[in-house]
Image (tube, rainbow, N blue to C red; front, side):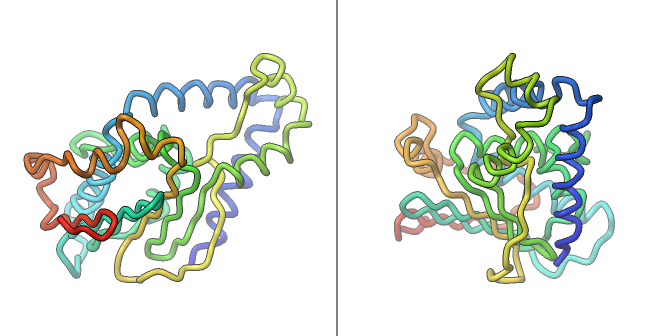
Length: 234
């Protein structure tokens, strides 16, 4: 697994935000994240499907050998959402796009945005785990809070805390390596849903029950979607 790459991304983030040149960078990130996730609320499931479709299209465009069709399995039970797809895996650029948000490598014809669009799940998530190819990475509010506690005494962070006492590190900015104990033939994203969001107007269950088959018109590479909600299959 590419554990060193994840550790490098984390170190780069901490270094960037604790130097005098960072100014109010973390405060800006807080504002951008709040704006972006609010704009995507209600589209979380669609964004995850679009990301999978875009990744498959990118592989086709690069003439990569794909061993299987793009199939997506969605399972939602209690407060755990699992979205798994065959066909493609996260590479370094894909992971970096999730961590760094607005630096997504996807432009132009690709529908979704693995940086901004993926962040839509922050409307729900307390924890996100990605198992894909060489990567097994976890993000959580607890991890982000621990990193923030380590750097909040730095002068650049203290200055921003004066302006915004609720300053925080975005959850997806600080990745952590974990053991890869999921099937290796697919990309699996596991999202632990905040209990307060389970009955949200745009909750996971409501979005899954209201999926319109016409979305397949905008997901040309997707061959099959399987949905299981509390043991009931669609």
